[in-house]
Length: 413
Image (cartoon, rainbow, N blue to C red; front, top):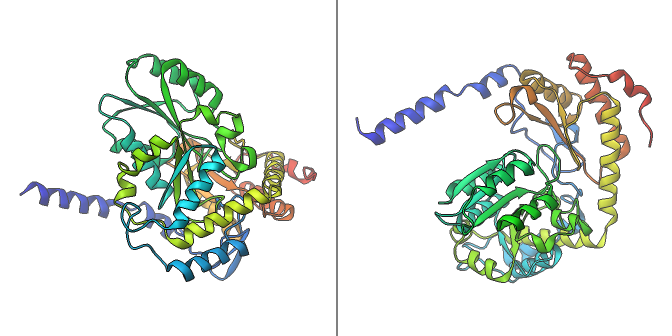
């Protein structure tokens, strides 16, 4: 039997052996690919029923904003529905260039480059910046796109313990002084909700000759001056070499960008394969991102409301006796520490009108499973109160360890 045929048979056997999804469906507890038949807002429609959305990354609640939708419609009228090519060839529009200029100004860098998705940014940038004799250092809790980008690189990849600067220093201290050392890290970690220890990381990078790339997918529109992200939050924009962001969270669209000095952006334009060999970001996505960015900068009260909601939700969840992760942001992990019960809670909450996201093994250890809530600026306090009350009830009904009796006297606005 030839090698190719053998590999095909192994792939088929592996696919056929995967039964986890089927088992969950049989138990009516499958929590993925849930079909939503409305706009992403604080309330969505699933199976004809209204459900409060606490699983969206639209932190500022702009995906259904009239100005954002109007901008997308106008862009289609002018540019059509797609660019029919890559940015490298026929797919660069004047609004792509406008967006890049606006983004560079927003995050405080010389230039920016727009990709079709945030995942493609990390694939293209990380895989092209370093060579065979160089090193990429990653926080162990980094997003999957960072990990996959490093796998495409020819460089040596080292992981350090989550937000553990001592472990990072130990690894940096053993590397050749003349090698390129690129430290890539989430600004806000997407499951834990905590923020990178950027001041300490910057100090280590300077001591050992490293460069820093911050993935600000969950930081833009959330932290920093005017929502400009993690580097701005710490006043360290000039110390961070590359700032990456996505448009599918606070910016209410689809796509991503990298911002840096002019020479680095020029290099990436001609070496990032996920840019050169992928179709360009669609006109409607570009226009809606521009509109969302304008709203963020002209309505700072949205970010203030997001943080008021975050503080309120966190207060109620803790008062309800629920175990939270080390969150510092609108991402709120609530631990269950049992795979099956995590699925059951998710299903029970949806049946009771609350949408949350389950995080189970192998994404996390089996004893660290959780539901992930994310708060939006457009949530009302009443919606938050309803969600927390129903979460506490679900935990109690499934005998998940809480001190839920405290909830009755916990609400203070």
